[in-house]
Image (cartoon, rainbow, N blue to C red; front, side):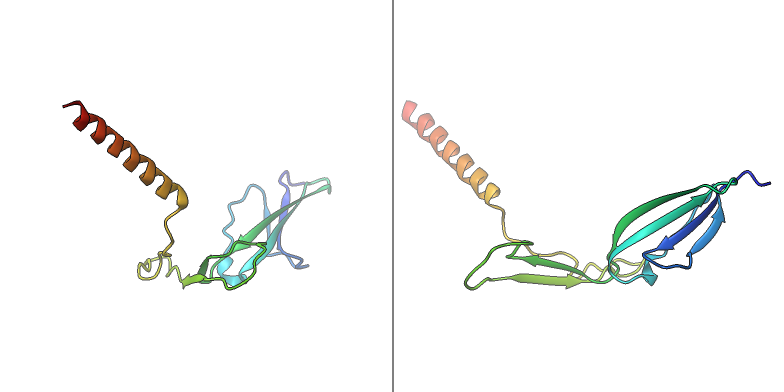
Length: 134
C-alpha cells in the first residue's frame, strides 16, 4: 500500500482533471490556455485510506491586453456627459516587454495639487517674513 496521497487538479467545473499526481508535487498551471476572467482551481486530495479533502481557490486570468479606464469607477452613479480616457496595451511575451503604449496617462491627483499650494503658501510667507525683517 502506498503512503502518499493522490492529488486531482481541476479547473472550473471540468469533470476531467487537468492532472492526477502523487503528493508532494510541483505543478505549473499554464493560464495561456484559459480565457480571461474568473476561474476556480479545485484541488481534491485522496489519502491512502480513501478519505478526500477539497480546496477551491478562485483566481482571475488576464492574459489579454490590459485595459485602463480613467473618468469612471466601478459601480459609479453618473449623469450627463463623461469624458473618459481609455488605454489598452499588450504585455508582449515572456522574452520581451513592450514599452510603447504600456503606460497609461493619468491626470494629476488632487492631493498633489494641495501639497503644491500649501508649500507655495508657506514659501511666500517665509519670504515675506524674511524681507520684512530687514
